[in-house]
Length: 70
Image 1: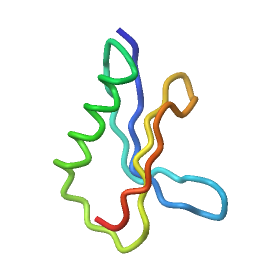
Image 2: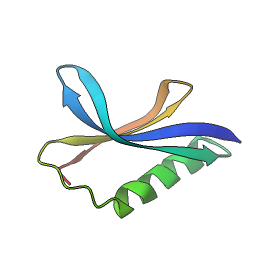
Image 3: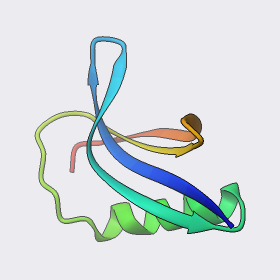
């Protein structure tokens, strides 16, 4: 199993800056992304900016998707 990091991020200039993260243990990228999406749905964080969900493995993004405002 690999350890992934999921993050809810703001865009700051050209960089994604995480404001909430979760460490995920998963068998593969698809499982990690599924768990990250489930976490995002369950997150009750309220923000007023465009937000991105990003999943990283060893510091490299394997998934990145704009999800709008929460």
